Image 1 (spheres, rainbow, N blue to C red):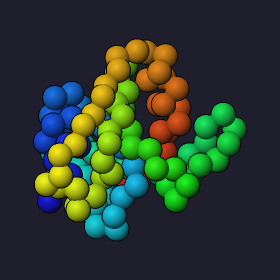
Image 2 (spheres, helix red, strand yellow):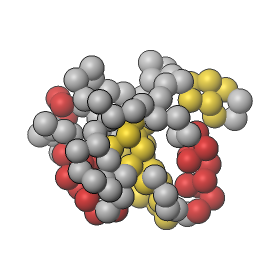
Image 3 (cartoon, one colour):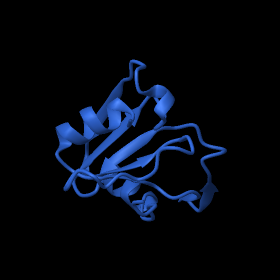
Length: 112
């Protein structure tokens, strides 16, 4: 079971591996089962403008493709409990926004 919006909608539409920053449950990990469409979880903590932020302090949910120029904000966390909940993602295609978040998402958890 994987959160529907991340795997079955966003990753499928982008046709790319995505890096996800989101509060998560202990059950879902990075997922590398689908070649070319992995879900990689951004490692906590992250650094934004020289300020450290952790999953415990930050409630935002966002993702970027592994390469590209898209940034998406998502209203639901990456968690099994959200599998059947309606969710919304807003994606913006701007290279400078992608570049900033790509720097923030430099470290990801390895697939299990």
